[in-house]
Each structure stands twice: as structure tokens, then as C-alpha cells.
Picture 1 (tube, helix red, strand yellow):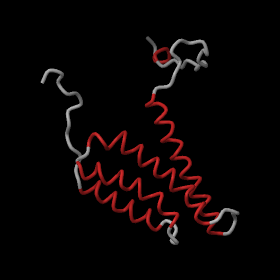
Picture 2 (cartoon, one colour):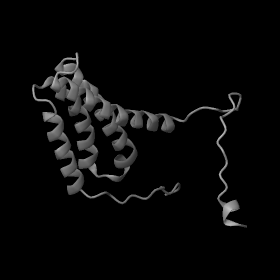
Picture 3 (tube, rainbow, N blue to C red):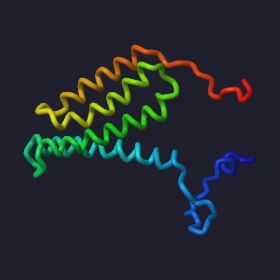
Amino acid sequence: MTPTSRFRLVPMRPRDPAEPARTASTLELFFDLVFAAAGAFSVGIEVEIDVLTGDSELHAPWSSFAFSIPLAVFLLGVWAVAIRCNAERTVRTVLPLARLLVPIDPLLPVPFGLIAVVLMLTVAVLVWRQPVDRPMHRPVNA
């Protein structure tokens, strides 16, 4: 076997629309939502910068929702996929609480004020509390 034949690239082909069981799983759709929220967050930051510099027709409370809602969805995704199963009770409580507090930020007169404090406290808790070692699979007949 030559090195070139071992790493032969095969072009991707589109999936057949008539393929049986051609559906996306709930996990795939959830990952799509989380990655879309991460992209929407950066766009929301751009919208907020345009509002602060006067280059946008949006007004302050509505433009702040453009980054706070995607950030809340992203926090939910990170909590659900990566942290929920490997964290103790404090961390499992702080992240959903942060997700609920982030969308309140647009209602305050200081842009990014509440979000900065909430994310700072969330990171502090994540650093302070260590992950919990849990077995990946529980015994069936235990």
C-alpha cells in the first residue's frame, strides 16, 4: 500500500432524497442550533456596535436582544452537551441561572453590564468547582 493510496480523497456526493430513514437526529439539530447561536452572537455584537456609534436605525433595547438571546441559547447548549453530566450541583445550577439572566440585560440602561457580571461569575464558579468523575455507563443489573 503506497502512502498516496492510503489517503485517497473521495469527493463527497449529495445524499439521495429517496434514501430510507433520511432524517436528522435531535442531537444533530441541537448542535445546528448551538452553532447558529454562536454565529448570531457575533452578528449581534456588530449590531450593538452600530447602535452605539449611531450607524443603525435600531434602538438600544432591541439591538441588545440581538446578542443576548443567541448568548443564552449558546449557554444552554454548552450546559446541556458538555457541563450538565460532568458537574456538581452548584455548576449545574449556575449555568441555567446565567442563561436566564442574560436576556434581562437589554432592559438595563448599561449595555453589556449584566452580561459581563453574569459571565464573570459563571467563569469563576467553573474554575472554582472541579468536574465530577462519573462513569460513562451504569451497570444494568446493579
